[in-house]
Length: 297
Ligand SMILES: [Fe+2]
Image 1 (tube, rainbow, N blue to C red):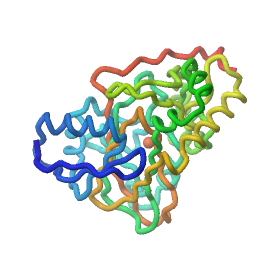
Image 2 (tube, rainbow, N blue to C red; image 1 turned 135 degrees about the vertical axis):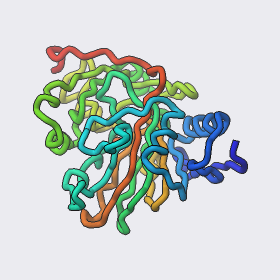
Image 3 (cartoon, protein in one colour; image 1 turned 180 degrees about the horizontal axis):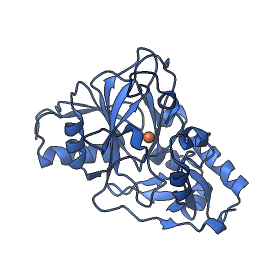
């Protein structure tokens, strides 16, 4: 294990900065286990002054499970498809209008799939001088703070998840990046509204306003209102850590315990280039059931 590893909390609930770790050096299993346990506790880990290429980021991700290519193929790394770019810079160097707008609504990654990721990582390659941060919300603390009656009700509920189908207004932005065939092929998955963290057993509110569009046995309007109410509750400043990027930062977040979004407040002509990988658990946490299209109200 690398010596003198330490953690400094970055807020009352979520986020901790890790010191004493150089990810470009070989990491033994004890160190990887320490990172995994720290992530389960703090939900977001920040490492400064790292320098990884796409191969190294993918290899680091593989220590925690199976990095998988993201749905939006246009942003995948040419040689390492499990690594993609989150950027406002197009491949020809011009401003990418979708890249400016993407991921600026609260979400957890890939809840529109049957199996969900374990964690994700972003590595800062180029960062804007103004704004451009990433915000993370603690869905464990958010659940704990709900009234007891709401918690009891939610434990019995099942959310409906489909790619950018939720009330956060992202549908048209994302639809523009996909062919009609791909859009038509998207499925509707049922995930529990409350889950337990596989690492520490804490209860987590597993509803996000980008991909959750309703609940089983609840009308659409009532479902939309509940999703919006829960999103507002969960993103109160007390539950949120905002990461303001420096070149070399590497941020790891627990996908089950958190929602995140880009602040979306940097000028489009200031280059922002983050390298990302999304890692699925080697064994799925659970497998969602596919929702029958005719049952959606
Ligand atoms: Fe995301």
